[in-house]
Length: 263
Image 1 (cartoon, one colour):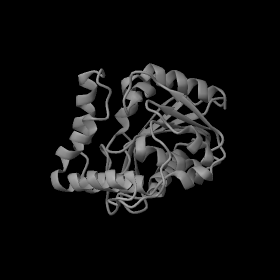
Image 2: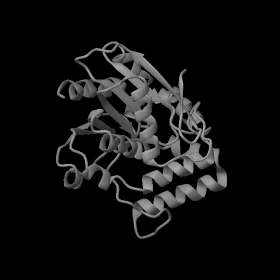
Image 3: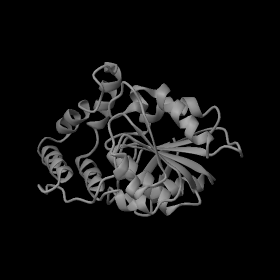
Image 4: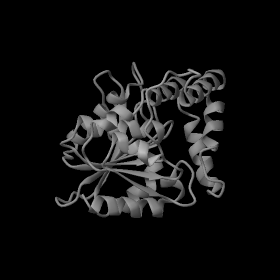
């Protein structure tokens, strides 16, 4: 597996698959909190027949390492853009997952408009900037509880949170594999992911002009989202929890195909 060395000395492992066709954009898949590139196995199998597919273990996740700092959302976006540049990807659709992956996808879209033609956000709303542990905002309170639990119990707490993210009917083997992998995430990396969620995504979305698709398994406030991203479109899968790319991949792949074909 190739790897990219960041300016601060961290290593990001990635996979590039598929065929380069001038008429079709590449697909860049960005995993979420405590995830890894295997969250996109089903998408890589499907789309590598017709597109170039780039996915990675972000700093500190999976096989990737952190040298000094787990990084901000902008750091992660810069890592991905550098890998795309190295691999001569000039036009891409970006797909992000969850509260950590989606803000990075949005930051990549905002910071590199010549690269990103459109962006898909999987199962996460736009969030304001909050303070972790602040009781005056529900998200800040939830992130505070998660942070305290992870500091106290480490891998056990991460695994406990992860189990709640799946639909009750999702195959146990899928849940088991994802939970076990998430629990291996180093505590500082997991906490940095919570901070990136707390940093918010509303302002980032407000600076974006490319097409945006929210692909949800749960309800989303469409009016609130369109206040920041009036170009937003919405779709919803059936029978999935927080990880529809793992739980209902056929639905996700079909929606990604439709979105990509319209760009």
